Length: 124
Image (cartoon, rainbow, N blue to C red):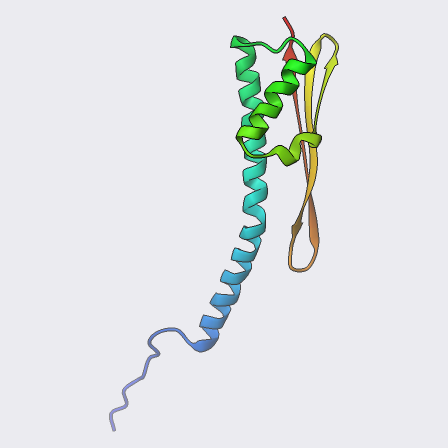
């Protein structure tokens, strides 16, 4: 008798379930991490913009620097972060410091994410 070996074609139900679970976990983590990453990139962009405009349109006082910062936060629709920035004069320069904490909720634990960034502007 001639036996033909039967080979499975396609994926099994268990393979599909495992794939869906892994995909679900990746989507769950992405939904949480992507906004945090976008927020930190936006802050980096805001601070870089302030640093670059310091050459052409310098902020010579703390009020000028704070006004530029608030303006850029409003443009980026990040008004909720105004309190996370401190603008002060230090050693003849203007120091802009950003400090905030976020929490990444992993399935098994919550992972704190701390963001700290400083910008020192020379006053002319």
